[in-house]
Amino acid sequence: MPNDQLQMLLTQTPEEGYKLAVKLAQKGIELTQPSEEIRQMLRPVYSRNPDSLIAASQVVAIHFQTVAAANNYWRMWTPLYR
Image (tube, rainbow, N blue to C red; front, top):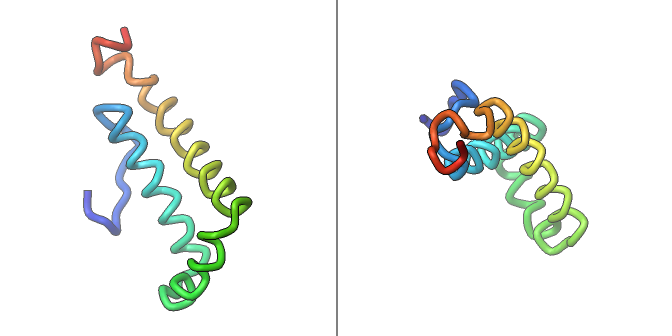
């Protein structure tokens, strides 16, 4: 999948689904703050703030929950989950 394009929520494995969830979170930040310069300037501030890190983890978790549901929790593709 190209970095600038998100085509669908379907993935082959939970690991791929998690990577997609992280990518969705990153894209959300890029849309919210399109300036790379400003994002780089702010990174040292939020990267040391526990509340900011917890909030970022929550966003990824919500995206992962969405991806997992879209993939029927991978039961159809992975024998381990049947």
